[in-house]
Length: 410
Image (cartoon, rainbow, N blue to C red; front, side, top):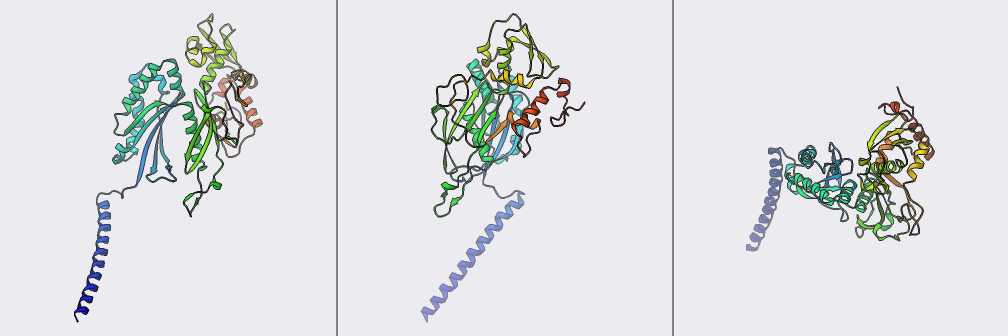
């Protein structure tokens, strides 16, 4: 009899314990929902934010990124949520007006405080990477370059983010970041998982794109060569992304961005003139005056510097694409190569492999010429369009409604 009573008591207790635990769980869930509703806030999202300022030679852009706290194959899955372009030139141009740097940075940093949730400010890293414009300033005046970075750091540290520093990145780093970015956006790092061991299937790796980046002061080329042997160690980089190893070739050509390359061409062509340069790389009818001292102020033009009998020179455009091309080709020295294969100026370059994505100034020019549609233009089509555009009189070519496919509209 006693055994029966004891058994009934145990069953009663077990049922009630389950009921109590179940009721407690329901109450806990309701409480969480109620707190969220009463505070008019969603339940916390397990994400992180990051802010990067890309300080180029001609401008600076601020990017805000967001990613899940959990990584995929030891690599974060990052999404850009907004971009803010700073008004003004690159930070190297503020070397003689340091007091204006704070004003320069403020609008986009204020924007960042509005986009990133306030609760995440203190744990959101902020990082500024300066590229070729500041690399040139450091060559010209290292103390002044450091002063600019100190002023930038002082301004960025005022905000309640986790400031990680402001520094000049190397050309190799710049090329690598561009290569990672373009392949990430194109989904080239995606890999199928072998669900038996949860590791990437080596046979499922996608062919990566090479990256071509044209800035104002430098240009970069980065790609995975078919033969992984890279004869110049300074051009080799190694990554492990999404569970896979990559060995890439990269090189940054300082002074061969669009702005500095033009300076080099002018410094070369002005020699032997009487102060008037008839230049095929400018439209017919285009005229401007430039100080010789300004032309020689860049480290990129020092090799062309000469004592000239004039302080200023005039540029008169003649608009001839083929002559312009021949003038620019003279900037590339291909006469010697200490390696099995070179690009120019004795720089090692392995045989090109795969498809390439071109961005920055490459994209801006192609977009202007209406060549950024899905259909890739042939080299002949591009050359024909450039010849037509370069021959247009300046007053017509500078018209904002000009269409390279239809000709200028008066």
